[in-house]
Length: 505
Image (cartoon, rainbow, N blue to C red; front, side, top):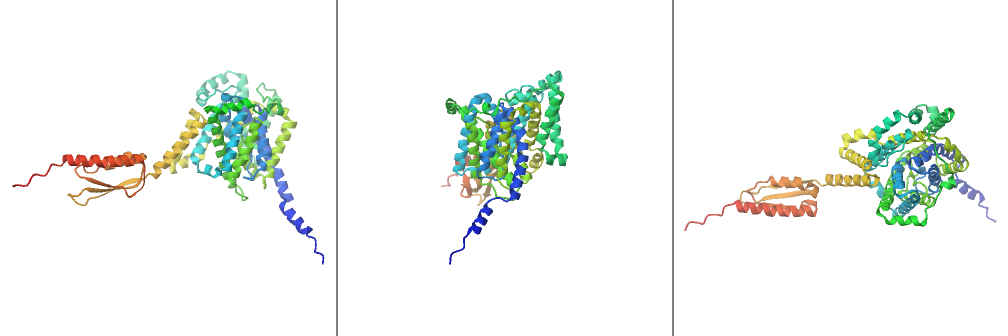
């Protein structure tokens, strides 16, 4: 007998591999929602970073079409993030726009290498307080800088200068009609962002950032308000791949520090975002090493194009999940819509007032500050709250890289302090015998002052035998201090003890 053809089975297998119509429809709808959320944020982050607005769209496109295709987190959406705005602005001011592509490319290559070495999971070991402090510091500096943009004023370069200059900004704005007009448009944008979610029907139809920017643009155009608008030079004109001569800057410590800061912050923000997105859906969990490589590939492409760095963005990712996305097709399609907009309708960007984008970023910066978590954290984990505050304050007063390093150092010191518990037990075998002193726990230099006080409180007229076999760990500083103390203590006891009188003959 001739065997029956297996075509129906093959067709069944093929159909099982392809998404059904419901999945495609859900992903298509979600991609439109993510596109509408991403559009004003891409433009706003670029303008606040001091680069052409089109470069923000380029990064969003790469986040969809490159990172979106790669494995890692299926529902997480990548693009330019408010969390990197301050660092990008500092990099552009220090090294120039032409060097931005080199920095982003180098950071992408480092991310690829870390993913290949399976280091992605280690980012989960970074203290949450350091990450929250990093985001809070970024939010504070971002808000301080965008307050100037709300009034169409130029912001100072450093974080402290921005904060100290706010008083002067208020005085200058109060006497300038144009600045007051821009401030009104920006403040109105913030008000729409705060109130829009309360109108549930409107919030479901149009994302808050898009609604706020559209309303501000309509008011500005309708009344012909004389305020600054976005400058557009064209998508292809804005893309400037780095020249070979720019790579020589990687030999400098300053640029290498910027690359490391980009790598650390972009990777940590992406992987923490992935952990948050995993809690929002019941689908496949994130592979952190693959996600790190996907982010690295995206940043490498962005660097070649001279665009902004990317991270996974929780705002777009949560919008993607809430809109019903089921596969990575939604984030890929959102990149397609951004590409079509940037290619076909770039002139629309020229209608957007800068103060409206500043309002969007002030609102985004405020959301980066974990105000709701501070009070319970202070009650339950006071040391973690201190680390958060130290990291945020250090970023405001110095820069991003030094602030994060100081936060990590504080976290390590706090952990070492909490794990180095040590105490002293004393046994008295009798007046003619030395005291037996047992030191137990983990003896580190952090606990040495307290340990020294406990030993000094022992009777000064009794010899001592130190027993250290109960210690689980003892560093060199403690070992040297304990042996020295025992020797000196017993020598002093011997010096104070009178010599025995000779026996009568």
